[in-house]
Image (cartoon, rainbow, N blue to C red; front, side, top):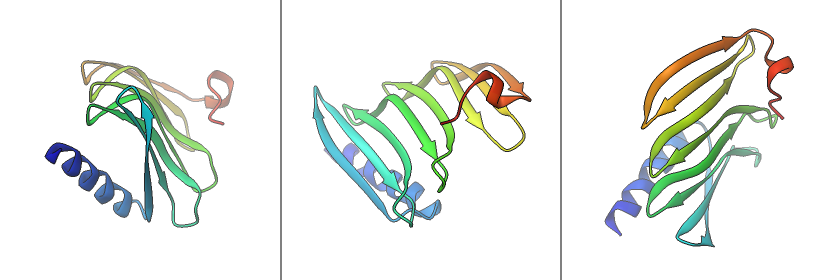
Length: 117
């Protein structure tokens, strides 16, 4: 239980550093807890899941206009598979295995290859 409080504290620090003021934790069954963090204006800043007190499953973050900033998957607290990071200039695709970057590709025409909505 202590590790859950540490994780919640760490998430709240991240939330406050990004200007967010609220984080919800919703029990989804099967040891999953849905996490939703909000920007100051009430729009969603981040969504994802915790399983056994670790980041797990798909996580996404958004700007205040609802545009996706990042999307990827955690497996028991470690980044795995393809993660996508959107910026004004390009889309960055990062391949992870066991929380280690395996490959990175920058796409200049981000809307042609991946939709961030």
